[in-house]
Length: 430
Ligand code: DOR
Ligand code: ZN
Image (cartoon, rainbow, N blue to C red; front, side, top):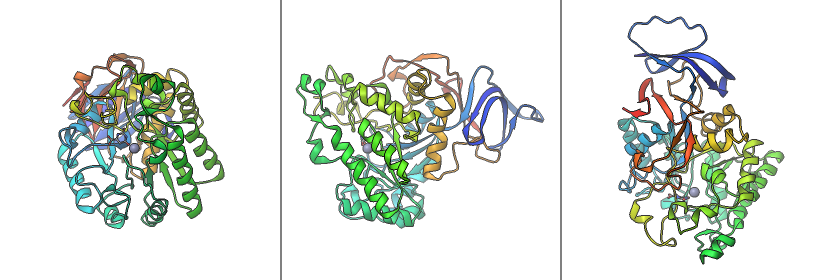
């Protein structure tokens, strides 16, 4: 089937496109982008994109799809459907599954399930250590050959520095990058939220910024010492941004990401013991939010990821201390980026799209995040000026643990084309 997307504002940072254009897809592939496309109208779907923005299908390099093992929270089908609702057509999923994604069999299983589910391309991330136990390395080579695109023990830090060093060395041999969840357990001190006046007022044990920052510093030092790349996950503090900024200046091969909640919320969102604002790393302060925005704007922070972390209502509807960490993020990330970054003048719209599609694709070395002719036709269409209200009951995700219910955001995806098929049509998933 052919699809002609007419008169949309095409933003395609990979090719420097930013203007009113048409896009033609044929048989799952982008076959034309321009102003005067020669089109024969036989068996062709036409989408009028006047007044709308047309971008590469978004790429989320950090999410938790929970399958295998935690299908009561999410599975690959529900998770990728939620991703499509958010305009995301490629996701990289973290290995804290059950069993852990620490071997070729689980990588293969995830890829097979994703092919059947069909709402997004799924790129599994393999574990750094067996069982995410932080004791011995997982089978890195086997996982790479089965399709792992990166390595991480996300959810857990790699506490042992020697193991992190070995992981980075092996990862480099296999052209992979370690994604580091930076947390020093000793400094985190079993805390529940950011250390500061809000935690004190709530009577909750706090997690200091240093718990994140010492590990960011450590991993930069290791990467620099052995000449290997490293990617810092979910940066949340001013100090972490500054460490990455200085390391990049020295030429260290370090990349990093943040999540929409770290530029849109502070620890005050936890007030009232709101467990939907509990995550790891925790929400920080206004000063950290300002630093995250500076880091996004000056290029220190390469990409925006969701850290989509679905949890069952019973795992959130409990005492703050007992509630599990994490929030769902697929269906709100574009809207939060538009509202808190583009509308506030932190990023231009092309810069936002670059951080949500092209940059993560380059870091993972996957052929995504572009509207180049010959590429798989993954395309997202939205109106960046159109306001919408978040309603968690409408989420496609199995889990509803979002602190953004009722927020007024912009640019809800209206059409998503995945592998040349329209899978989201006027906001309705097919
Ligand atoms: O909040 C979080 N949730 N942080 C993590 O690092 C892991 C994630 C999860 O798996 O639920
Ligand atoms: Zn993490």
